[in-house]
Image (tube, rainbow, N blue to C red; front, top):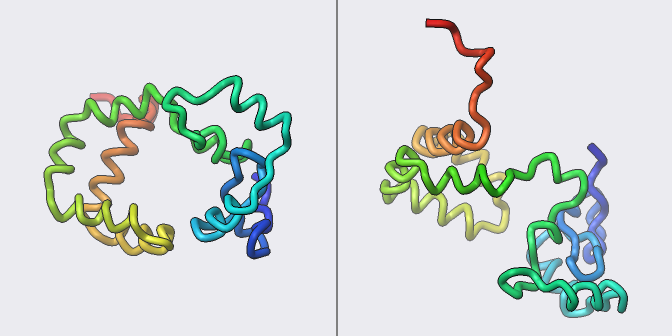
Length: 147
């Protein structure tokens, strides 16, 4: 996998994980995204293509716009994501108010990565993460012992 690019806004080396859907400029964070959006001037051809094929919800952002080619290997297909919504085990875990608060805190955090590392020490959060992984990446049958 290729190393992350420098942020086009703040210049942080190797920090850019995201790209602008209009001009493909790399940036590293929400504040840099906001700054970039204020001064973004897309290529006319890209803007024309975008107006010809709007996204389903007419949203200016889509997963395809955010993911780079290198990130594509980490993308979970939509049919597997739908399995998350159908899981009774996952629904049961999400009934826990403590887990919901943890997830809300992660969602609202600026530094999600370090918070995730901290929460991966919480047994309830680990149980939730493991449940999600079992659904989207079921264990291969060859690793299961015969009965």
